[in-house]
Image (cartoon, rainbow, N blue to C red; front, side, top):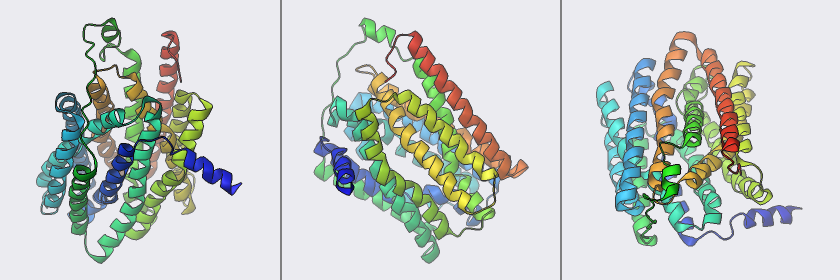
Length: 407
């Protein structure tokens, strides 16, 4: 039985290109150092003594930078190629993160985080296109899942190590580690990953281009609405949730880091085999996304049912399994929806939908908590999660009406 499980786990990794494996290692190194985000709201309230409203505005600035960066990343990827965008994004981001620790005013930090995220998130559309270049079409979802596995393995180490760094050194140590790992990752990329020219055929004059024009693609815009709501709810995990852990359940930074690390560790263990199994069984991907969004909603609803500390773990399990099922297949839908020659723009819009959620998610959550308390915010997130489920049902109906395959 154990041997069968091990073999199944190994099978889920077979057939992926060596370039995708290198990308995964580079991503792991970079993500392991991304310790600032889970503790950013705590840093701003405790070290810089900012109000919840000010923290909300800084998180909004974070999201606006992310949105602009995603748009620029898509345009630049189509123009100069994914490799150059990835290289310069990581290199400059490293120095910007190091510099952030020296900014201590509200307006200064808002501008600093805006600039940092503008540069950092040009990376995301480029990364998505790189997977299309380095992996075979039939392996794209698994390649993406491997990258996500690397991200989450890094995220397992990141918050835990971040909690230790805060306790033993200070918050400034997080910015140093964030910056240095960005620079280290890009040096490794330059050494081991050869630039690959990814030319796609031009189809501007074809019928397919007209029919699948990104601005006329009704199904894709419904899908982007789903991604926005999914991001809006999910991002509470990194903005308001650490404050909830600290203020209501009195957890220390190390305990918060351990709880956040549980998310990444579970994904590291289970996501790849689950995705491999789903793809082998040819399950309906859009139905799976729908169920995952329901798990997102439930993860917040149950926080209001009990003050027992164990409910935090149950909530984390719900949102983690929802994340495992939602993110790979929403990414896959965006990649498969993009016509040749428009990959960067389609994937940029996918990233931008998530970034737009970042603009409103933290600010909304902080204001609701400040005025009505954590309980009201969790009910709001539950409602938005259920609204995303309704949009997914609309998307599936739209695709059925257009006689498109739902798998």
